[in-house]
Image (cartoon, rainbow, N blue to C red):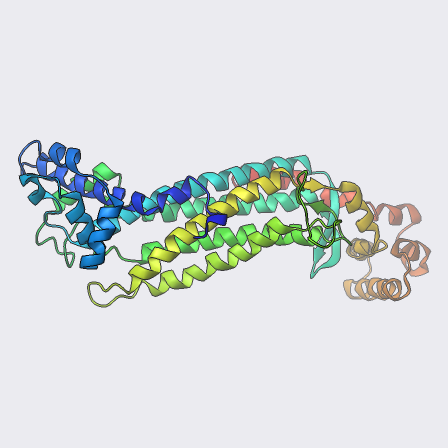
Length: 433
C-alpha cells in the first residue's frame, strides 16, 4: 500500500514488525497452553517471553540465507534462549502461526474499518435529518423524474452503509478463527485441547476442519464485504460528483482555505475526494477475484495464495479504511445549496408533475390509457417547443372536463411528493420495521 492512502492506526497493523509480533503472540499462547496442561515445565512461558525479541534486522538477515521467513523468525527469536527453546514452535507448522496471526490482523482491521464506517453512518444520519424537508429533483437516467427530498437521498446512503457494517461484522466474526492442527490438519503432533486453550487466549475460535491452512472461503467472504462497502461509498460519491457539476451545482465538496483546484485554472473546485473514492472502489472490488482464486489450493495446501495475500490484505483494508474516513469528512462538511435545487427544479418547466396529472385524470374517470396518451402528447409538445407544462394543462379543454382550475393548480405542489418521507425516516431509524 502506498503511503499516500495509508492511515494509522490501520496501517500500523500491517507493518512487518507488527506481523512478527503477532507470530510471537501465537507462539507464546501455545507455550502457555502446554504449560497449563503440564506438558512443559512450569515457568517455561515466562522464560521464553522474557528472552524472546523481535529483531527485524536479524530476521531479515537469516531469511536471506534460509529463504523461509518463519524459520528465520524462529531462529532469531530463540537465539538468546536456553533449554526452553526446545518448547518454542513445538508441534506446530508454519501455517499454524502465520494463519492464526493473520486472523488476528484481519479481526483488528475489521474492527477499525467498522468503527470508521459507523462514523460515516452517523454523519449521513445527521445530514439526512437536517435536509429531510428540502425539495430537490429526483432523476432517473440522469433526467428529471419527480420531486423528492434531499434528506431522503442521504437516508438511502445511511441505510446502505448500515447494511455494509452488519455484513462486515459477520464476515469479521467468521474470520476470527485460528488453526493449530499441524502439517496437514490432523493434529498428529498437537492436541485439539492445546489448540482450544491457546486460541481462547488469543480471542479466537478453532477452525472446525482445517488442512495445513485455514480454508480461504472465510477470507473471500471478508473481501466481498469490503468490496460491497466500497461500492456503496462509490454510489454516494458518484451522486455527489454529478450534483457538483457546474450546470447542476446542488452540492460541493469542502474546499479548504489555501486549497487549489487546478494548476492552470484558478477558478476550479473539483470533486477530487469523490473521484478518488470512485477509483479506490475499483481496486477494492478487483481484490475479491483474487481472494476467490485463493480458495482452491492443491491437496492440503500449496503457497499460491501466500504472495497474493501479502498484497491484497494490507491494500484492501487500508483502502476501505481511508475511504470510510474520507467519506465521513466529506459528508460532515458537504456544502449544500437548497436554493440551487429549487432553480434546477424549475428547469424542466413543470413536466415532472406529469404522473400526478395523469393519475388525477384516471381518478376522475378517464381510462389510464387515454390519460397517458393525453398527458404524453401535452408533455412532448412542451419538450419540443419549450412550453410550461402547468400552463398547458390549465388551458387544455379536455383536462378541464375532469379537473377545475383550482384542482389542477394543486397538482403542481412539490411538497406533495414529500408527504410520506417522515414515515420512511421513522422506518429507517426503527431498523426497517
